[in-house]
Amino acid sequence: MQMLSGNMMRMLMAGAAVTMVTAMAPQAFAASPADTLVEGFAIDDIISVDPAEAFELSTAEVTANAYSLLVRLDPAKTSEVQPELAESWTVSDDKLTYTFKLKPGVKFASGNPLTAADVAYSFERAVKLDKSPAFLLTQFGLTGDNVAEKAKATDDLTFTLTVDKPYAPSFVLNVLTSTVASVVDKKLVMEKAKPVTPTAEYKYDTDFGNEFLKTGYAGSGAYKVLAWKANEAVIMEANPNYFGEKPKLKRVIYRHMKESAGQRLALEAGDIDVARNLEPGDLDAIAKKDGLATVSAPKGTVYYISLNQKNANLAKPEVREALKYLVDYDAIGATLIKGIGEIHQTFLPKGQLGAIDDKPYKLDVAKAKELLEKAGLKDGLTVTFDVRNTQPVTGIAESFQQTAAQAGVKVEIIPGDGKQTLTKYRARQHDLYIGQWGSDYFDPNSNAETFSANPNNADDGKVKTLAWRNAWDVPELSKETADALLETDAAKRAKIYEDIQRKVLAEGPFIIIFQQVEVAGYSKKLKDYKLGPSFDTNFVAPVSKD
Image (cartoon, rainbow, N blue to C red; front, side, top):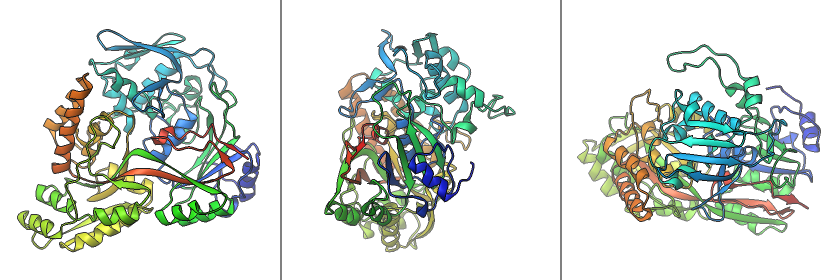
């Protein structure tokens, strides 16, 4: 991307029409202007802002404010979806065909009209690009060969989606609230597409505009992405063509700030309006400060340690169980996540269909030693631990390192930024990894299929779930997870997910530690600043500023 000076960055914040962003040192930011919302946020996990590729929590918030969907999760009632681009929809009697009628008169930020052809193209490019989130659509039987027929425009304002099985309709609609179903401007993206040479793995001769959309924009949401610079900032500007209620503020800046203390100081100084990654002590300090306030919202996000089954020692069931007894859950809950999370050991967050609250594990060094000896590792073992260098994960990793050592397990922490650690994890090159998983949509399958399903454990497997990332080969559990999608009776479906969770809890390569309570400190100059039940329901368009 083009490089700009600090002076030009200040001009941007002051309202100059600058469309690129530079390496932004902290001193490049002036106090937050009246027409701009500046959020301090650890956004080092962002890899791309292309909705067909983006699969990180921070990016979900950016794309939610920049792109539109057919339907979106209702933040006030997460068991339901509400229309966005769709005016209405119907489901065929055989539960295979979904027909969406679009709102007329919608335009993209470019000025191009938004039609059903754009919706169809968005599905087609996501499936054919086959990036990490593509499986959310391909699970419906969509492939590069059939997507043009299965997801198509029948006229300018009618889009039909044909799925391969009679799934519970709530499941299908919930999937369509995920980022990968965002609608892009077909005309603009095709103009920006670059030719590529087909390969055995990628048979198309175009990149479908992916290189452009990694840092560019082609949406119809409340804000348009003006620029993204890795580990520095995302800058968004109000979309004058937005079809909904117009954004209150002209500009939104997510400024990368890793440390909680730095965010708090910047908030107190008025350099930012919102601090997003606060540790318990800084959260308390902000709550007591005149002119500042705090807000919180339970999130469908769980934090976990994963154990790569490619490591022969970690593949032993006794070792997996032993490590679950080497986490000091009580201490972590009382200190590191106080006010920002609660101990939770199962993969479905509270509030979702079928969620349970079993907590069978506690710190028990003697029990862990017994299990390690049973696994033939009386003298312990040595493992590496990839950790994003931000809190609370760093603190949790260090706590685990200390308690694990008591049982002879030597843990070498390898710190890195979000992009580094996530890229290594996705390549199955870790021993241990600490991460967070946020539901892509509010249906239990969102978490179940990633924690408990692995259709193809080969290194070149296309469905790269968390089970796959940890080389956990579970064909029977994968089938049980898939079968749950065809159960339309909610009570029976809930029982299936309860069973799956208990199996993963006992046998899986995941040490699930807590469910996130997202918090933020903010200036009382802001009005209507809220956090939603998911990262893609943290909407900034309603926010205004005194």
